[in-house]
Amino acid sequence: MTAGDAPIPISLVAHHVFCPRRAWLEAMGETTDTRQMAHGIAAHRASDDPQRSRPDSLRSVDVASETLGVSGRCDAVELDHSGHATVVEYKATPVRKRATVTEPVAVQLALQATALKEAGFAVRGAAVYFVDHQTRVDVNVTEDDVVTARGHVEDLRAMLSSGTAPEPLVDDPRCRTCSHAGVCLPDERKLSPVARRVLVADPDAQVLHVATPGARVSLRSGRVRVLKGDEDLGTLPIERLFALVLHGNIDVSSGLLRELLWRRVPVVWCSGTGRVIGWASSASTPNGGPRVRQHVASDRGHLELARAFITAKIANQATLLRRHGDVPHVVGELRALQRRVARARDLDDVFGVEGDAAAKYFAEFATMLSPGVREPLGFAGRTRRPATDPLNAALNFCYGLLTADLIRAVVACGMDPHAGFLHSSNRNKPALALDLCEEFRTPVAESAVIGAFNNGELDAASFSTVTGSARLRDGARSTLIAAYERRVATEFRHPIFGYRVTWRRAMEIQARLVLGVLDGTQERYQGVIIR
Image: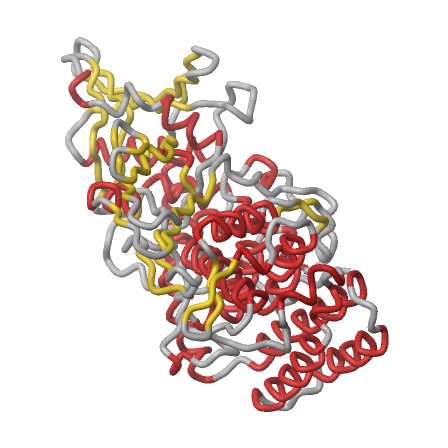
């Protein structure tokens, strides 16, 4: 990334003072939806409205300094009877409980005061108004403060011009209060247990699957509505929507699509059998520089990532067979193949081992079903599309759901789903999403399918046969979607970091670890391996 001659936002300089990596993430377009961010936005609501200006108090004043190469906006500029100006910054303190002027705020005020002077204002002073405390603290901006602020601007410009992501902070208390901890993952970069969890919680939102043929999804009064004719199938606030997945013949309004893209909420279209047809995502995506490096690495090949994906896949296959099957000798053979992947010399070797493991695994896959369930399904091994039996049809459908989830996770990180390291981009499929699918197929998709059959939610009658291929009936499709959603919402203890996390959140964590390898802050990648 090159900063060029464009002015640097003053707020970005303040973030750099707090943490260089935080500033990098902001510059890369990473956004978060945390409580402290929402609190800060609410606190600025009055000061962000220029129409609330008065002759002695200007609101939301745009400023720029050509000498420093920065631009920004002052929350308020107060003018006394002689025309002298005081710049006032509004701050909320949802985490920091004291009304204390920190170094980032002091630098921000110094830059704003300098820009105001260049605009012709006679600046007398500066202040911070703490909204939560309803307390005003005056700040004396000196020439030394301006020199310090200039140094931070130069350091930030050099960092952005280098194109290299700064290292995360190590065991630093700032991470506890940082709104970007959930995308930075500072403690996770070491790929070892995390003693102090800094991850944001899973969002209070949901993935909406619409699978009723002929339904229409639209937006009305801030709520997403699903209708079929005159029948109201459901509604939820748009703020609760994490992603929208459409299955089969579903219509969606242009107004809803526009609003979802504005909010960076992805929309994925699937066929009735679960195949991902396409997706829509915002043009405003983060990590443009690392995305370029992703394409370069995809073209050159990345054997270490490919090995890690398949190592995790085979390990998880062995574990699931050990838990639910009765073929210990096959489990042992899979463990041996798992170790062989680490010695693979090229992608052909990786695929060869993966193929051997898949043959052994699916030859015994039906042993994980109870006998009364197994016989009527007629499962004779793994077949791809079109599925010739109910079990393969269910697997295909859940693999499609998993692919949609991983497309969302990859897009959220600003990476291109098509540029993979194991699957070839020449296949014109979402290769990186399919790469990440490998480690999640068994613990998520296959586990959901096995559970749905064994607990009686699905059986042979849940499927129809059309021209030799098995297909889920409409009611069974909804049942399997519900089983899959229960699975991805299930918490487990992350095998690397040691804290509890849902499977859906784990998908984005793993995508961000791939991103870390690409931007240079992650030495290697390690997949999720269940025990």
